[in-house]
Length: 415
Figure 1 (tube, rainbow, N blue to C red):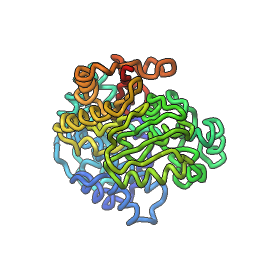
Figure 2 (cartoon, one colour):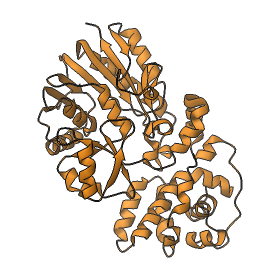
Figure 3 (cartoon, rainbow, N blue to C red):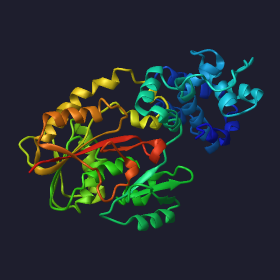
Figure 4 (cartoon, helix red, strand yellow):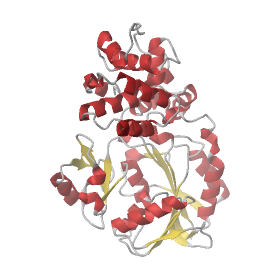
C-alpha cells in the first residue's frame, strides 16, 4: 500500500494566498494543540474560504502534522519550522514542483530534499522511535503494512439501527439524501460511505435514529457479546454509548441493559442517543455496579488506544512510552470486578482498541490463571470470519480488515 498516493490528487493550488493562515495553524499543531481543535478554530476565523481552500487547508494541516518526522528527515532538520515542513510536504510527498511548493509555503530559498526511502520504520511511517519499535515487536513482518495504514484516513462507517430499519432500506434512504454507501465487509450491520465526506449530522435519517457512525471493528466487538432479548446485560465501560446502542438493538429492546461509566457527562449523552434510537430498556447506573448476576458483561476497557491512531494526525506524538503499561492495573481491576457480576454459565467479553500484548493477550492469560471458573471460548462461533481470529482471540486491524485495530477475548463462566 502507498499511503502517499492520495496526496497527489488534492487541490494544493487552493493554498495560494493562505501561506500565513496555514503556517500559523501548523505552528500550533506542532506545539501540541490538538489538530482538530486548530482546524475548527481556523475555519471559524476564515469563514469566507471556498470549499477547495478549506479542503486544502485541512489536508495540509493534518498531513504535515502527521508526517512531521519524515519531513524533518527529508529536510535534514528534525525540528524544522512550520513553513519548511509545509514546503517539504508539498514538494517531497505531494509531488509539487519545487518552485510551486516553495511559493505556497512562503519559503524564499527552498532547500534540496533528501531522496530515497528513509532508513527506519519510524522515519518512513513518521512515528516516535519507541512506538515504531513497539509495533515491530507486535506485528513482526506485518509492521510496515500496519504502520502504512495508520497514515491514511479511516473510512466513514455507519451502523444500521436494526430496531428501526434494515441495512438495505437504510442504503436506499441515504441515497435519497445524497449519500452513496456500500455494505461493510465484516459486520452485517455496516455501511461504508463512498465519495466525499457528507455532513452526516445534518441528515434527517440520523436525526430519526436510523443509524450511528461506528467503525466496523467496534461493531464486531459489540456483536461478540451475542446479547439476546429478555436477558440482563451490563456494559461496564459504556462511554457515550456506541456499543450500548448496538447491544440494545441486538436485545430487540427487551430485557435489562445496564450501562455504567465513570464519566457522568458521557452517560448523559448516552441517554440522549438512546432516546433518538428508540431504546427504552437501557438503565444508566450512576455508581459502580455490585451484587449483580447478569447474563453478559462487556468490558470495553480504557486503554492506550494505539489501534485508532489514524483518527488523528497528532495522536502518536501526544503519547509517551509509559502508555504501554499505565492502563494495565485498571484493566485488571475492571476485569476482576466484571467477573464477579456474571452468573454461572454467563459470558464476559473483554475488549480494547489497542495493539499491546500487555493490555490484551497477557492480561487475559493472567486473569484466567486467577479465575479457573472462566474459560476462553472462540469468538463469534458460527458467524465471525476466521480472518478475525488469532490465538483464540478476536483481532482486527487496518491493514487486515480496513478497520481500526481492536482486540477481544470472549470468556464464559462455568455453570
